[in-house]
Image (cartoon, rainbow, N blue to C red):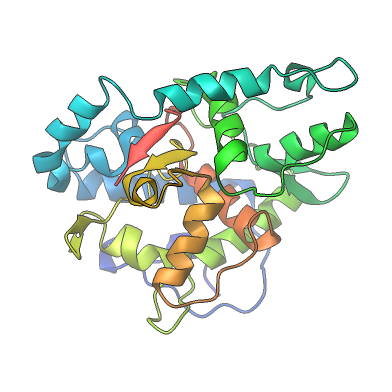
Length: 284
């Protein structure tokens, strides 16, 4: 069976049936990146790779709202929370250490494949692992609130650095393929895939909102989202957003920090290779 990248993007990026995770090489993944990014650069002429760090705000179809967004960014609503995040990051542990002593990867390189476990390390998982290793209670809610603030604080230190996840290990390539299949597979009562909204219909309107492009997903997370702010819970990690998307297509969401969403996060990070981080960000 041919890989997804060999399908003609211009013809609709339709996913053929897949059964199980297949082997894929590093060179094939590199071709995936070029094909995926090339599709969006052609779909939105005039935008550069760097522009996609602004998510939906960069799209020409969102131009009528961009001025309001730029005005809001002069005094971002998340600034007080980012100050709180910095304080939380520096709170001493009972053993005298702090989050500053955690052994974390660079913020633009997550998720990281761990050959010793055959699994992906996320920044969320590494923060909780550090807390546990230092005798502190792990953060239970890994989708929002304190965890999202801590991740935003850490990743913001790498703003401007381009996404550069490592997919050279065969184990990482297998998890990339798992994430790729998740991205293109249809699910839920609406029978939608991630690609249906964020590739085929990127830039189109749905219920008064503009659908964001798949290129750029993840580089602004955690995000401060207007919809979540109305409910009093404005912060969200990327796994919170994945769960919301699954619910919107009437599919049962997977567990945050579970294997499915970690693989999906890895796939999206690989597709965003070369796009600068811009954390946190505000989204609709």
